[in-house]
Structures are given as structure tokens and as C-alpha cells.
Image (cartoon, rainbow, N blue to C red; front, side):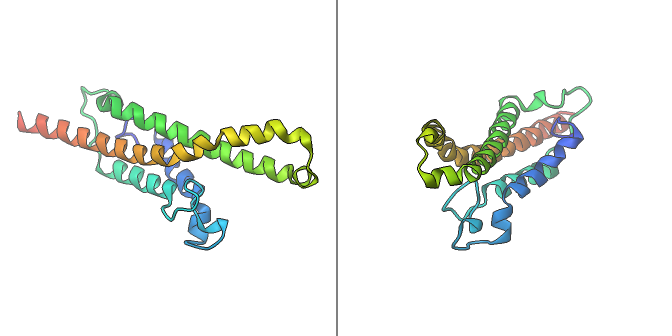
Length: 163
């Protein structure tokens, strides 16, 4: 993580992403909800696991910054985009879990047909676009990390060939 220009404790991101796909890890390709990635319902691609593996690969292949380079600035737009996409995914997972817990708490009221749940159902209905957008953001994160690795490798190759 230090080679990526981030504090070392940010390395906990990879286990967080793997934990986000724990249902996929427990029952791959099952016929129930537990067999799908929470990032991509009805899909067999574990999005968060893919993000974790992309992050681990980036940590392995990225070149360490030189002494005159500011670590995070060297990635430019790719680095900033990777951080922003991760922040989106992090808050999506938190929102997804909170909504699921909230729906579980309100289940007896749902079954009773309580009309006061209209605003909650409107929130759930209007947040569907986050579910659709999430899979593209996850793959954008991996692509941006690949771009960061390519930029670090290119910059190191150019400086070593010019000496």
C-alpha cells in the first residue's frame, strides 16, 4: 500500500472486500441468495473478490516511488479515480447491509401491510440505480488499478533507460 501512496493500514481493504463476498465464498453457484455475490445479484462473478484480487495484484506489481516523486500524485487521474470508486463501493456495501437489516427489522410491519412504510419503500425503490451502477464501478476500480500499475511501470522504465 505504501508503494501505491497510501498508508499501510489501508491494506485492510483487501480482507474487507473478501468479507463483502462471504456469501459467494460460502456457497458458490448455489440456487439461493447465499450463492450469489451481493455486488451482482443473479450473477456468478464475485465482484468484491475480483476487486480484492485486483488490489492485491496492484500491490504486488506497482513500482515503489523514487525519492523525488510524491507517492500518490504520480498516478494522477487514475489514482484519484481508484480511490473514489473504492469509496463508492464501500458506502454501497454499508448502505446495502443497513437496508437489509432495516428490512428485516420492519418485516412484521410489511406482512401486516402497514401503510406508513411508503417512504421507506420509496427509498428502496429509488436506490435501485446504485445496485445497477455498482458492478460497473467495481470493474472500473480494477481497470484504474491496472492503469496505476502501468503508469508506475512506464515511468520507472523511462527513467532507468534515460540514465
